[in-house]
Length: 466
Image 1 (spheres, rainbow, N blue to C red):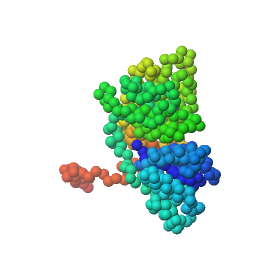
Image 2 (image 1 turned 180 degrees about the vertical axis):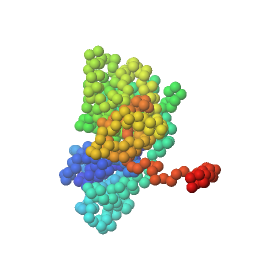
Image 3 (image 1 turned 90 degrees about the vertical axis):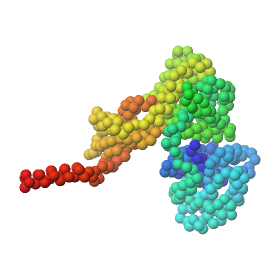
Image 4 (image 1 turned 30 degrees about the vertical axis):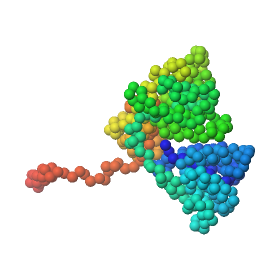
């Protein structure tokens, strides 16, 4: 699984600014107000070939015994307990504060790997600004500026130094991992038990029964699988309990770790915005997807039509590739086609796409419909090859490809999907402009026999024509 970096520090030291820098987003609200971040915030980042998860926490007040600050401190402790690396942020401009010493002592007791990060050091000599922080006894401080990006990449490189690069070949050879994901109380654990044929996880009519992601290995028709039962993802404003707040992070990690995700919807309730948000996250991670609409047996025809209309309206972005199944996990009805769809989605996600066939399909698509002209030039699409899997990535080479419109990109995606019958997985197309890789290269050297024949032809030509 991806390493998790947790940002910890007293209020207003720049944790949320660093979070936005690490995730290349503006997901965390940033303002010069202490205590602005109260809920835990999570995001995804990448440095080169190394992906990671990052968690932003509220201002850490470990000595407070009650109130909102006490609840925030509980969340921070829980995040630290699950961290692969803790980034302890201090304020270089305000210097070492008594509060920093208390936090350092609390972190030292956890036994986690800690990096001391001195923020807001832009325009200052790093050796001078970090000198007083050595007394915290947490190793060599790293001087950065989250607001300006100074030394942030170097910080992440140090934080991830002990974590290996993801092994794509090994991952492709492993058996399928299937994450069961959805809102609380939609029947995820019941579905897991039905798929396994036994009571392996607790299924109870109360939201939040599953607190952590549970990995279960099993065999089906002689093939190994791993099922992952995850905690329910509810809307952020309705997440109250500390344990449940961190369950969200564990669920997102499980989605990242899976090959195929089964999104479980509750047919007894309307399709919510939260269902669409969860589907959007799965799509963003590029995981293969199968949708199971649960509790279908308890609906009449009118209710079924309403739910299908809801799906068409709110989950339209899934309809062009994801397979939908209408099931009852409790009674086992509608389950027959679920696993074949999972197998098909996994096969599509891991498919090997040959370069000659990709290029033939690309050229045929261009001949059928050329990319629209952009100004005085028209994009030239020359050839394509596969750049990765889970999800499949197709890299197209040519010139002026930055002018390709989103509409034409979707046209190419649909063309490749239909040609290779990629059902159940997102498909990504990347454009790479540049010269023809064979342009300017020396011709292949002739063999000795071919060279002699060419020489004889030249000599005959000279004698004949002078």
